[in-house]
Amino acid sequence: MNNSWIESKIDQFDWSLFGLSLVLLTVGLIAMYSAAGQTEGAQLQNNFQRQLLWAGLGMGVLSVAYLVQKKVIYEWSYVFYAVSFLLLCLTLFLGQGAGSSRWIELGPFQVQPSEVMKIALIVALAKYLSGHRRDLDHPRNLVVPFLLTLVPMAIVFKQPDLGTAMVYVAILFPMLYWANVPLFHLFCIMAPLMSILTAFNFITFAVWVGILLLILYFANRSLLVSVGHFIFNISLGLVTPVLWASLEPYQQTRILTLFDISIDPKGSGYQVLQSQTAIGSGGFWGRGLGEGTQTHLKFLPEQHTDFIFSVVGEEMGFLIVALVLLIFMLLLLRMTYLGFQSKDRYSSLIIVGGTAMLFFHVVVNIGMTVGLMPVTGLPLPFFSYGGSFLLMTFALLGLILNSNSERVD
Image (tube, rainbow, N blue to C red; front, side, top):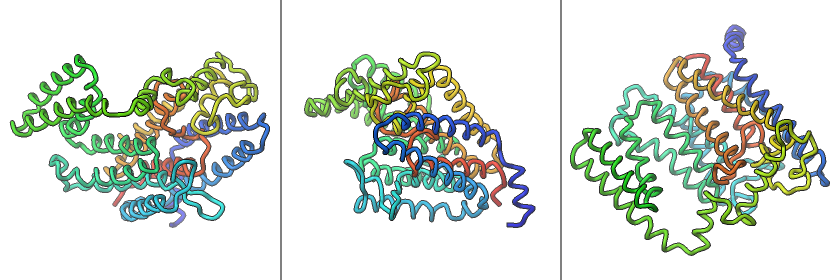
């Protein structure tokens, strides 16, 4: 790398995107410091110090991801995916964690391969979908991207980590759409889920069947294809209530609690109720840093990881919460704009995949802290404690900044 090339990269650096990320990181570190400042033990204080270290390392990771030549990333996309997949498979044998097998011990450090796989999946899908001569109108060409997504998703689901498994799907569909995969194909993939969700009420299921018929009619597909899709979705809808009735009552309760925490307020719904109380008690101005009762009296579990946003709401108030949401929105809109303006198809797909991943994390995490989303354990970018996730976030940011610069030759 010669000096002129490095100077060109510096000139192309998107300081607005980096600045928005830095503001979010700063607020996140303040919230974590406040959560740790009044605790009895040293654990949370150590977590804050580690988070500072990870943030510093993250800047280095961002720099590397930005400065590496894009053609190198393109050429090694599948190799990176293969290595990440092997690491993910190792969690089945060497994985550690409370009630799970998500981490691999590397000396004094713990690595979470499922986080690395998020970036590996994005670059691998981008390389496959950016093939200029690949006909994505034909369903057989969608087999590879689905295998690239569903196989690691199954391993992560087994760990178990439902939230991260859902992230992989959240990455896949926007990238397929951006690659101009026909909407009818995407509809046929999503239709079975709608058939399952609407099957528990006759009216909603009847409305869905009507919508399904209209879409199949106007899609102008062959009679065999249309009839096949219709029969499959109807059969799936009819069998779903039967399978639901075969579950034990406690299994049904666990599933229902994902959507209505009041069913089990002292069990799986406890975290969300305490989070809602913390955010509501903050009012407009907040209780002040270090003054949150829900946080420092330990009523709020996982306050430094999954529910760090509740600390922001309780101690900093509605005003800061609104500003944080605004900055997240500006960050995601800026990324989307860069995706539109990207110089090549591969880069555009990377930006869209990364934006979709961050959007899903933000919506699900903040949604679950206020009771609008089921609790899935997804961390909040730039806020939640965790070295693997923070480094992955900075690496992804570096890739997006890189994708907005030079062109793949």
